[in-house]
Image 1 (cartoon, one colour):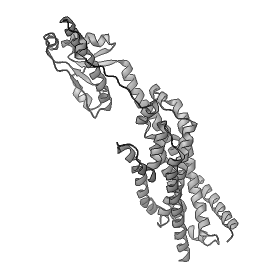
Image 2 (tube, helix red, strand yellow; image 1 turned 180 degrees about the vertical axis):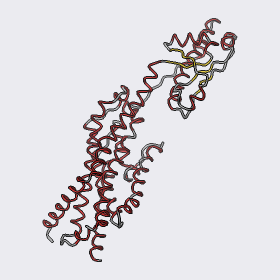
Image 3 (cartoon, rainbow, N blue to C red; image 1 turned 90 degrees about the vertical axis):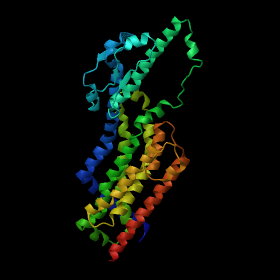
Image 4 (cartoon, rainbow, N blue to C red; image 1 turned 60 degrees about the vertical axis):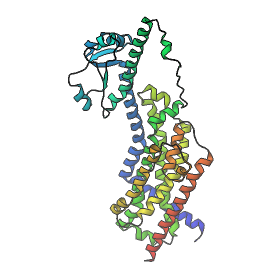
Length: 393
């Protein structure tokens, strides 16, 4: 059969499969939810989470139990423009149940007398590590109490005619090498994972329906009776599934642009630098991955006799794609060259570099591109072989 005829047959199958996929309401719903809404909703939820911490920090409140025992400490809090709020009697239970979102400073009886005598009374900062909001505020309260402690030490030394610099022979300065975008990835580093999962689930239904679904409905056998080459049929089917996955990738990447308008946190809005350039760099990584993922899902589903069986078998692919990106989160030793050879992990790594403002070069994107091309070719060849054997039988 001539190449022209094979190309024409592949395009015919491509148009047919793409139209069928777009007519499927479930597919359209997955496209809408996963690619257009999921990523921005995660970004907005993250912004609201950070904004809640910023609002509590702006209130400048400190919850104290036993503040009547420490008038000097109360005076220090007020001079630091903090509002002192009396802790409820059952503050421990409220912290455990996350009803109280601020740590509690517990002042022991006899605090003022102990300070005047030069003793060191124990002041507790009570929080619950399971209560994220209270735990985050504990460090701020500890710094505040440290300021009070240094002030008292400075006054005691001054009263004895000793310079406070005796206790501080050196000055310690901090210098953070991370840029604002790098610091932002500590919060926005989960966004590439959601984009990858959106591409996966967007292509999943179409890949299963065009293979195992057609076999279950009995429409695959009439298709195989056509004189077209099996490779042409497979390329048409794979092209439709890959196009849908790529469409979801495009919508997912560009959906973060308008989502930035709804960010509530000024800090996150200032640090999260995501524009058209970053979206295009995301696509350079995701489009080959969507093509390879479509071929792999079709290769898994073509061996199944029903749609449900294909869903069960594709769980291995879903598990692998969802677990591999976690390696970059759990790995504390930084990026390694081998990560670019692992699908899903390579895409997570490169997209995280984009969010950090580092980007990547052609030599870095070449390795995952070659891996995706090999997976695509292997998947298409396997599906064509299975269809050829089915036609012979």
